[in-house]
Image 1: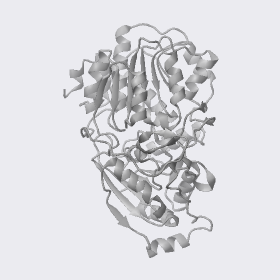
Image 2: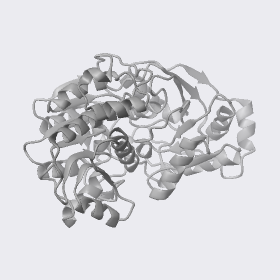
Image 3: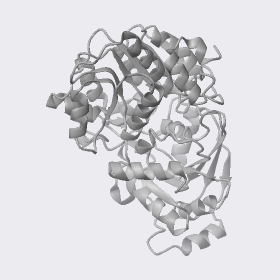
Image 4: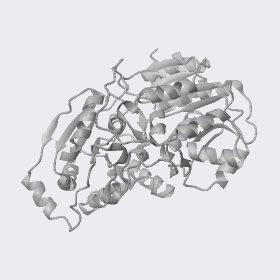
Length: 467
């Protein structure tokens, strides 16, 4: 199949796709849309940037329009679960864009904002509801939403859901869903615990795998720069002096670290903003809008907040700090090289992050090219010129991933959701246990090491593709 016309979609959807100047379905769209239209359950394994959202949004809208019935008050016909506010908003925007010529309602609910507008929208009943698990359970508990009329449910970014400790919330939501339903399950990686969750969620699913689990997009030029921890800020400013970096995402492990990096870039006349879970929803939306509009050149983000950042033209991703979960590296650098374009990923690696780098190379089955800037006199001089107190390096704990703390004892996002911890949606999360190699979890910290994933095919997102 080489055209959206070949997929059997509703003409109104084809009109929306054509208006968006999309011509060819990506591999996951071509493989997923037909069985979803037929009503089959689906297990999709695909990296970010492969057009995954359209792979479930288009056939869901097609089926809803074909059934042509109104949702009852306080119910939804299709439910999409998302790990973060940003991703939930992004998915809802896609549904509205694709279904613009259909008389179907779309609502999104997440924490960090008032309940009343959400209650009013749900009270009328909605065709498509996109939600974070925490806020969804809030509505269930308050009686403002029932799930007994759900026809199709989507669990998106399942691996990230488990990293955030949402496993118990997902099981609770699943128990409230009708037994007879269509279920779609998407994840960028498929370790054993994700596969077990999928097995309990799906019935005789079609499996679609367009990329090897935990591998990186071919179009991304990757490089590691070895540097002293206290000289990373000076090196980052030097990197940002490159005029080829037109729009960059910079990743840190902690929220406090993201704020510090954004402030430091500002002192170097590099327009930047930070986005993370401690920011209000309006602050996050404003930072993302400024980044999309080009008013700021750099967005500094944590792993959790970065989910849902679907911005075209991100030329570079910079890992200011390497992630302590190797699969997060795949998600991070997948923010560039989207829709068939090329991109570059630069990782700054200090001595105490070498173990993280070994894990990343083991899981992604590659050796990343490197440059050594240790002992660099230019960086030393620039670091010495920084304001006093700015050049204190972050203390790493590479052999205790699950207990890592960043600047000033702040816990890394995605690691903080143990029993009683609050999630992105404001709901108390019951999971969030420490991560072992291979994606398993236990209540104990673990040693370094990741398990290799066996590639089962390679995919490139095509030019003119829809996401």
